[in-house]
Image (tube, rainbow, N blue to C red; front, top):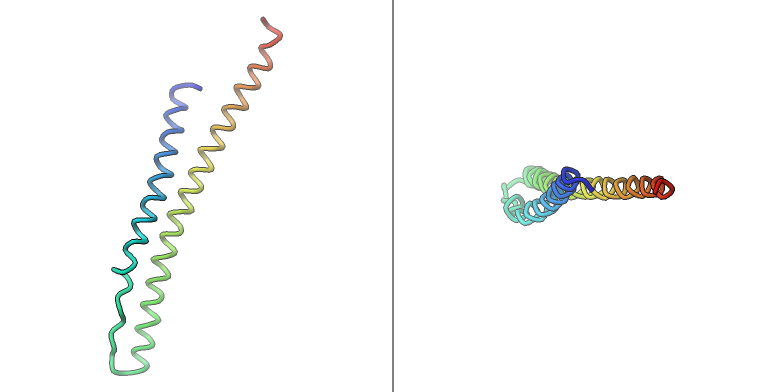
Length: 100
């Protein structure tokens, strides 16, 4: 495997790890984005505040999930590149067997 190809694979590994690590870190912020909802003194206002707070939490969870998805996609790309490189090397080795 050429050195520059190994660098790409290691970059993809690092990128995937970073996406997954940051998803974990972002999830740890859940308490900061989901504080208890204050009582507004009006049932309609309280309901609206709770709905907005739930939406913020859902967006927060969705973003963390997207970070994990991106990490999974980068891992898949890494694995695909690695499989492709192995297949190409195997092909050349098979072609060169008769050329000794």
